[in-house]
Image 1 (cartoon, rainbow, N blue to C red):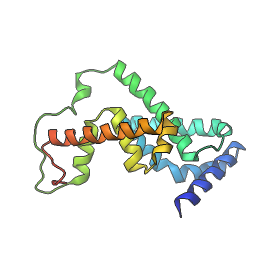
Image 2 (cartoon, helix red, strand yellow):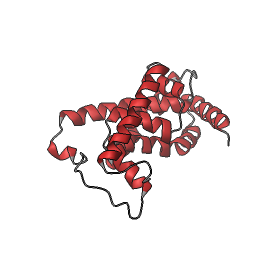
Image 3 (cartoon, rainbow, N blue to C red):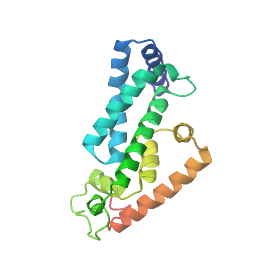
Amino acid sequence: MSKDRSAEQENNLLRQVAQGDQEAFQKLYEQTARRIYFYLYRILQDESLAEDVQMEVYTQVWKGAGNFKGRSKATTWMFGIARNLAMNELRKKRHHANIDDYAHLPDQRQPDMEAPDRQRVLKEAMSRLSSKHREVLDFVFYQQMNYQEIADILDVSVNTIKTRVFYAKDAMRKAMEGMGVTKDDI
């Protein structure tokens, strides 16, 4: 299914959800839950918390579907909800942080690259980024959103998104260098 057709189908499902259609809600969930969950997991870096927040996202989608104005894709609106809830959780977590929460900081060990595991290396490098950098790279590379869609979710200008992506890529490069990995290694 083409990206535009899929987006239109999701928008139609959301309009039906706004009218209380449970079957449409189930279809919308089936089409979007995986993307929403993995976005939350990459931002929160906690399976259980990502699952909890995902449930809250869909609760808010069910309750607030009537607030969707259709000026963006349904998924853009849903990722906005997911982002807001994830940021709330990160603020709570930061408030209660302790030294054990920072086990992901560089320990200067070089990763085992004898059997390159690109996904593992990228996941580790992403975990070393700030939540702001992880978030923007997630939207660009995992969610394949364009800069305008990301700007809509984050409520900033497209130029701000371009700048954030630039600095996030630079932070990713530095994180990988800190792991002893070059772009040629992956």
